[in-house]
Length: 220
Image (cartoon, rainbow, N blue to C red; front, side, top):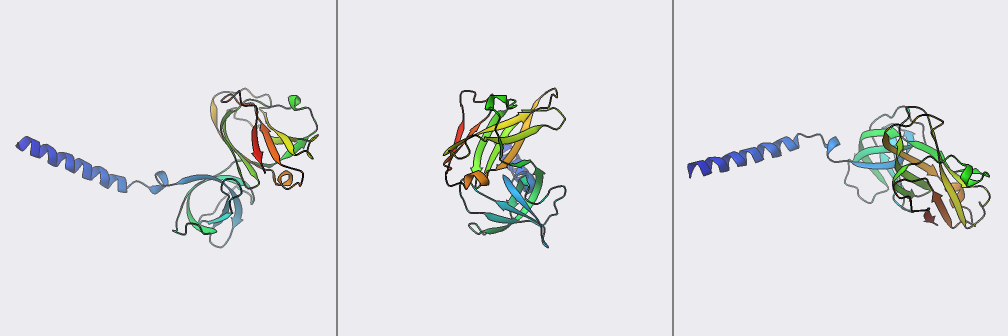
């Protein structure tokens, strides 16, 4: 009976210590969000960002208290953060920033070249989604250690059609590929999205994760 009592007390003590240690863990490693957002620049309080939810959700300004270096205004970034206020539903929120990394950030381009002539090296798709006027991409690409080309290119022959075919141009520029690593990109398609004749943006990519999926449609 004494052994059982001692064991019970020991287990309770271990549980108490474990809970106490959890409280010491930095919330930067436990409570955070990952979002692709637009860096708007610095104001007198710190870096300012704009968040757009899926589809046509209203924009939310994210006010931080940090300085961001090596990122230009209007560039898209992958932001790791958490809300510092309780103002859910507001159009402006204070945030704590834990990490900010620039990603491939570009506007939709166009080409008159035949689609099968475009360099479209393979990727491993993780997610493809729209937020406002941006098409966002999370995938894996093969590492080269050198600069590469990553663009979203519209078929210039059908820009006035209701459905416009767009292709993920991915060019390793002749560099040897090694292991796969995560990649994030965001493309502003606003110029096309606002056209009166436009109804559907159709994205084609050379994907080894879902090779049987020919394209992904984003309807206006």
